[in-house]
Amino acid sequence: MSTVDPKDIEHHSVLKNDWWSENSQMTDLHLYAAFRIKFVRNGLANAGVQMQNAVLPLEGVKIADVGCGGGILTERLARIGAQITGIDASADLINVAKEHAKLDPNILERVNYIQTTVEDFSQKERESYDAVVASEVLEHVADVQLFLKVYGIS
Image (cartoon, rainbow, N blue to C red):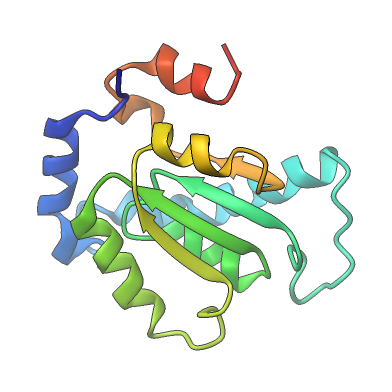
């Protein structure tokens, strides 16, 4: 069983050249990024994560960004200190994310991208992260219940 929807992967992979354009179909992802960062920070704080560094409040926090696409949220979390691994089933989007991350040498050591499925990743990395983010993902998976089950949510 897999949560990957091949048609959805293909649809988003076609957008690879527009992923980092703020004047494209990805506009909303760029516009909502600040809200998603605040949501993640607040969630981590509510879970007891201590944020000691005002410049890099997520310093030392290991996060997995599931369904990271081209890395919009992943990079922003790295910029505030997170040690983050972005995963996506689309090889095209992982390549876009890797290339874009190279433009910011300040985050290169904090960002890792892996082309994989959530099922394979969770079997290999289940206990390796402080938090898992799956933002803007559920509407794109083939089997929502299986996706949630992988993380013990349902």
